[in-house]
Each structure stands twice: as C-alpha cells, then as structure tokens.
Image (cartoon, rainbow, N blue to C red; front, side):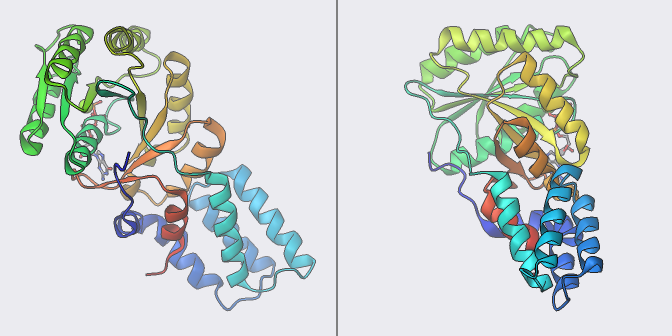
Length: 307
Ligand SMILES: Nc1nc2c(ncn2[C@@H]2O[C@H](COP(=O)(O)OP(=O)(O)OP(=O)(O)O)[C@@H](O)[C@H]2O)c(=O)[nH]1
Ligand SMILES: [Mg+2]
C-alpha cells in the first residue's frame, strides 16, 4: 500500500528536540575530536539523554571503546557513522500497514488515556484520503464525555463520515453498526477509535477484545491492524503499556505519537528491540498532516542531521 510515504523534511522538523539532545549537538561536539575516553563519555551521556536505553547505550559505548583502543577508530566523525549504522540495524526495517484481501481494511486503534488515539485516527484518515481511499470512522469511545463529539469534529474537518452511538452506548454495538455501514458503502478503510483505558482496568480491556471479536465476526481477517498508540514522552512507561496491551489483544503495530514534543526520540530503539512489535507510524504534531511512516533509515538520518 503506497500509503503514508515518508517525507524526510517533516520527520526532521518533528525531531528537532531529539536532534538538540542527540543529533545536531552531538555531531557538532564530537566533530574534529579525538575519539578518547572524554569523547566517548560525551557520546554516552547524549545517548542516555535521548532515551536510547541503558542496554543499547552500554553496548554501543563498549564497542566504541574497544575500537578506539585497538586503533580501528580514531576520530569523532567515525563514531557518528558507527552510531548511525548500529542504531539503524537495531531499529530493523520499515513495516508497512497491513492490506485487506477482500472488503474494507479495518484498523483498530487502542491505548491508554490521552496518548493521542483520536488525533492519530484523524491523521491516518487524512493520509488515506490524500491517497485516494474512502474512509469511515467509528466513534467507539462512548466512555469519555465529549469523545464522540471530538471525533465528529475531526470527521467534519476532514470530510469523512463518522458512525457514532450515544454516550454510554455499548462500543461493540457502535462497531457493529460501523461495520454494516462500511460494507454497505464499500469503503476502503474502516478506522475504529476506542476509549482510553489503563491496562489495569480489566472491564475496559475486555471491552476491547469484544470490539475485536465483533470485527472478526463480520469481516474476514479483521481487524487487520491493531495499532497501539504510545506517547513518546512517557518513556519506559510506554514500554509497560505495550507489554500489557499485547497480553490482552494481538497488537500488530505501534503508532508512536508526540515524537515532536520530546528530546527522547531514542525511545524508539528499546521499543523496536525489546517489544517485538513494529513501530509503523509516528506522530509529529497536532495537525492531521503531522504523521509519518516509521522509516528507520530516515529516522536515524533525521536524528543526526545538523541542518
Ligand atoms: N505535540 C503533539 N501532540 C499530540 C500528538 N498527538 C496527539 N497530540 C495531542 O495530545 C492530546 C490528546 O490527544 P487525543 O487524540 O485526544 O488523545 P486520546 O488518546 O484520544 O485521549 P482519550 O480519548 O482521552 O484517551 C491532544 O491535545 C492532541 O492534540 C502529536 O503527535 N504531537
Ligand atoms: Mg480519544
């Protein structure tokens, strides 16, 4: 699916703060320096500050130290190239969104309160529309007051229809109606926004699996994507959320929102390495166009670019 092509510029702009912590300034600081213990110490501090994680940082720093000692690497510039290659390898390859064999592609969006689910739904809808696809939204957050109206406003702004139930209605019933509408109208993609829930709220977690079951019953292979939205500013807490949600529902990809609001973009590294769930999309602002497919190579370039 040619959906959501990477535009390097947007990623770079969105990652300004990570670059401040890691890229621009790190490259500037180590350029022209001998790769001695002091320079390696600076690199270590920057990596930790960017939330690359202690395990990865120690691995990278040990390798740099060994190479410097053996005379294989002498200059700060070499270290930057080494870090780029290594980080990219640890991030793995870009994972595209799933495709549906027949009928609408169904994307279920979940996550804890306030991480950016509804905004992310709007962003995906916007990108799909720009790509010429027909989209329908299901307002399955009937739990929080104002949530249905919030998605309704996005729908109006983007020119996308929203299937909604009354506040307090059974979200699985809303999803049922949305599936009927999606099939009747033969839309390309059905996007389901859900209520924020803590992984400790077993009732709400069960509700999520009920929604999934309704989708699976009516459309073969659905939901084709279960996107877990994580807030990049939450660091290690985001990792815990991902683990818990995966226990309740088969999460197929991560939408990492708010990557623009943090100097800790390096959190993508432990997410990619430790969770075994691909990061598929990143959110880089509050506007519908502030979304990018996660492209490890472009991400690493953006992290280290000095522009
Ligand atoms: N800077 C920035 N802000 C974002 C991003 N994504 C979402 N937000 C903001 O985060 C706040 C919460 O976003 P919502 O989309 O309402 O989050 P939610 O997960 O649907 O919240 P609940 O439905 O209450 O659980 C809003 O102020 C959004 O504008 C992003 O990528 N970058
Ligand atoms: Mg919401």
